[in-house]
Amino acid sequence: MDTQPDWKGIIGALQKWRDTARTEGRRDNRDPSVTTVAERYKQDPWAVLASTILSLRTKDEVTLVCSKALLEKAPTPEALLALPEEELLRLVYPAGFYRTKAENLRKIARILGEQYGGKVPADMEALLALPGVGRKTANLVLIEAFDMDGICVDVHVHRICNRSGWLSSRNPDETEGILRHILPRKYWKGINALLVLYGQNLCRPVSPFCSRCVIRAHCQRLGVEKSR
Image (cartoon, rainbow, N blue to C red; front, side):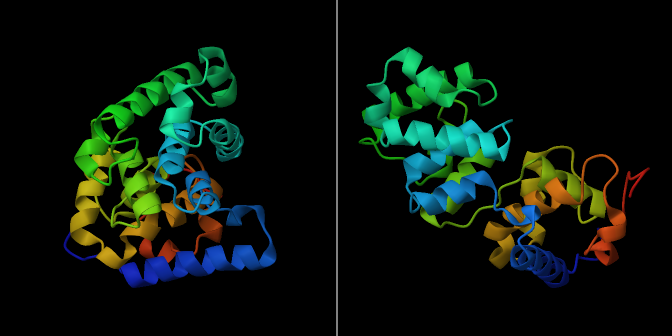
């Protein structure tokens, strides 16, 4: 696009909206589940990785319950490998695709033990080589567990960026690549949490709440046929 988005104005408006929601004690002030887990376990890389895998296609409230149950029994990859199969399945249920996630977690725990001394690597390519880990998960681990720069793009970030006309992309990975070129680095870590909250509460996939939008001045509303 010819004109760059007003990132300072966009991020500032979203932060003000989030902070107001927190002050008023509204339900739409909650951080995404993985961020909450990272804070609870003091940036423990294994906890962040495991909870991020559980969070895929799973509601935040379910992710928090499953993550807490799993990490109490398996605070390390080694501890997870010691769990009987049925107990592991019970701990990660009812996360979506829980059997696949349990299998991937066991494979990951084994790889971490064999190749990385039981530690989660702070490296994008190494993380992407783990079973069930895509760019969203890898970025979240680097950001939340290691405080490294990254841009986590999920369906909310992808949708809002394209709907607003800040960029044009076909999938989340492409969105991430473009954002790495147009988004100031100081906003990389925080944009996911802001847009996930906004996408869950106002900028919904269908019939978004455009009448209550705090970034409407920065949005072209591309593809929006019906709104509230």
